[in-house]
Length: 457
Image: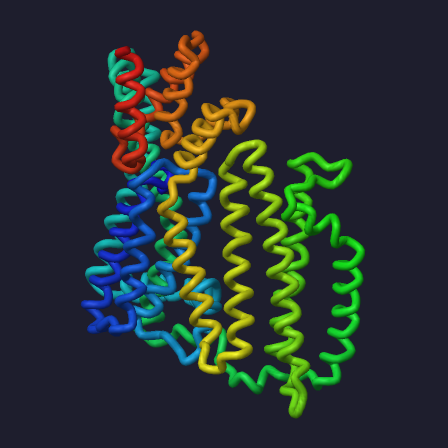
């Protein structure tokens, strides 16, 4: 994964995880529950984008989510799920993997007590000591004999350097193997759900409802004053008006950071109200508060999205602008679901939000943002909707943007020496990715073909 820059190496890594997990489960006599089928499909769907297109900056986030999904999937396969999905998610994220790390060393200690384990242990110790001896003796022989020194220099530039890299990555894999084995062994023993225990919903409601009145009424007043005083600034974007003293970039950025702060506070207040405040009998204050905070959040999100659309229309698309807009649109749906849950009692809010967010992450991982950005900006530039094609931004993008960069060079009529140098660099990068076992992806293959055709022309 590290050496391949999160491309085909991810699929190889994932295959290794599940081969080991299923072999372990078969030997332990564990059968995966039927409920794990959907998670299995989600894991498969989340793996495919890593080989479809070149990695972008957001690839790290998708890999982290895939890593969590792996953990939650194996947690489910081992039959450790409890009645609370929230507790299962929390257990999967940290306590379960970390608390059970010691089981690796317990198993290792027990294996060395057996005859076969002693034999393997002795063999490993012999190999380690042999490597030390070979290193010392080899160094002395190199100093003593010129012919032997020349042979080692030839080997050093080829296979030995490659071996060193794989040894280094193997060492990086040891901490992961310790955590992974602890997860499997604890699952076999049924130790998955102890760190976080499930509590009934009413057990968490510890604050009297008077707290809700004294806390939320001042918040309502503050929001109303804020909207009345800042209304022209907040909502001028819907009429495509730019407030005095603002640039498009400053206006859009300020809207986004306002959104983040306000929405985070609103979400925290909703959690506080619905998780820790006792039920109110004979009053609709709780429902009113939920509706008010959700509607305020939706209004601010709509304003911020309109600002971002204005920004993209003027400056073009970028990877950050795409993910910013996606984030805001996702938040809008989240608040709508929360709002709907206040009127439809049968809605399981946690499961629906988990399903929705997982779906958004998986579907968005299939969007080749570098390619989309290059396509949109080149089209907008040729149609004279934006003033310039930002080459500095696109030259830092992945192989996915290469065909559109070439199209831009062609549209100029003549390419400079610097342009040819950029294409040559992209050609070598794409070629290295295509030839690599762990770095291969189809966008690099497409970029390689495009650069070869351009150079032939």
